[in-house]
Amino acid sequence: MLGLSLGPSQAPATQSVGARDVALPQIQVQGLSHRYRTSDGSYVGALEEVSFAVPAGEVLTVVGPSGCGKSTLVHLIAGLIRPFAGTMLVDGRAVRKPGPDRGVVFQELAILPWRTVRGNIGHGLEIARRPRSERERIVDEYVELVGLRGFEERYPHELSGGMKQRVAVARTLAADPKVILMDEPFAAVDAQTRITLQEELLRISTLTSKTILFVTHSVDEAVFLGDRVLVLTRRPGRVKSIVEVPLPRPERSWDGVSGEPRFLEVRERVMRLVRAEIKDAGAGPG
Image (cartoon, rainbow, N blue to C red):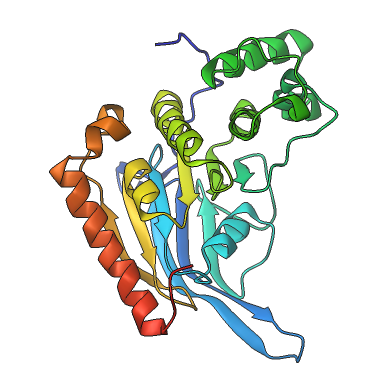
C-alpha cells in the first residue's frame, strides 16, 4: 500500500439535533426534476422527482435505459445546468453552479493536448495557486497512484486511451474534491482496458475514501464498482430501486467475482429491473 498524503481529511458535515450531532450525507438529492425544451417550444422530461442520498466514502453507481436522464443527473449535480425543480446539496450546501467540491470525469476526454501528463494532473492545482513544491509532491503521488510512473513527460497523443483516462481521473483527484462525478468514463476503451480501469478505480476509491457517483450503461460495471446501484426508470427517469451490493470493495476483482453467487444474484436482480423498463418502453437496449 502506498503511503500517500492525499490532501486534508474531509469529515462529513454535521447538523445538531438536540444534544446529538448527526452526520449529513455527502450528497442529498430531493425531488429533482428536469426538462429540455425542444425546437417546437414543447418540453421533454428527462428526470422526475428523483430523491436519494449518498454517504461520505460511498460509490453509488447509476444505471437505467438509454435516455432515462443518467447523464443529466451528473450535469445537474455538477452545477452545469439548473434543475426544473428540486434541490441538490453537497455537504449540506445547495448546488447552484460548478465548484471545487465536485470533480467531474466525462466519457469525452477533457485533458489538455498541449500539456504533459504532469502538466495535466497539476492543472487544477495551478489554478488554485498552490505552491510549486506542494504541486510537485501531489502530482508525484497521483502519478504513482494511477500507475503512470515513467510517463510523466509524455503528451496525450503519446498515450493509449486507457492511459489518457488515468490522467483524467488523476487530475480530478489531485484537485481534492469532496465528490467525484463520473459519466461513463470507461465506455470508449476496449474491453480488457475497461476491466483494468474498473479494478484500478476500486483500488483508488478504497484508498482515498472519496464519494463517487458513477453513471454507466453496463449492469456488470455498476454492480462491480458500486456499494449500491441506483436503477432509474425509462424517461423521465425516476428512482425505481436502490440495490445493495453485499461485497466488500477491497475483496473485489473480476477473477474473484465472476463466479461469486452474491455478485451473480445482485447482477441478475439489477438486470431484471433494467430489462423491465426497456420492455415497458417498447425499445431495445441502447
